[in-house]
Image 1 (tube, rainbow, N blue to C red):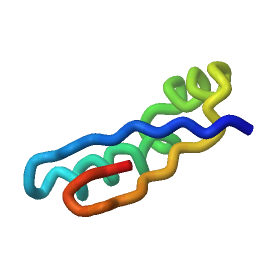
Image 2 (image 1 turned 180 degrees about the vertical axis):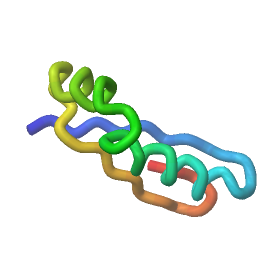
Image 3 (image 1 turned 135 degrees about the horizontal axis):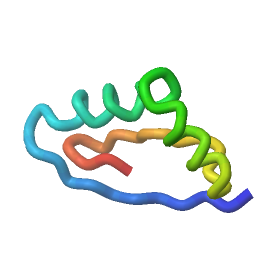
Image 4 (image 1 turned 30 degrees about the vertical axis):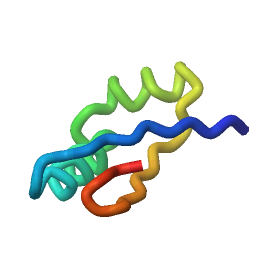
Length: 54
């Protein structure tokens, strides 16, 4: 399995909003979830190194 990472520097308070939106992919955007799986993306994980997301 290949792991890829993206680091983001967010404004104050942005981390909770980012995580909340990504946690809702399967329930609110089933077509997006299907497209991610078809592209080979099986899971998305968020790691926080305040205030940077990795």
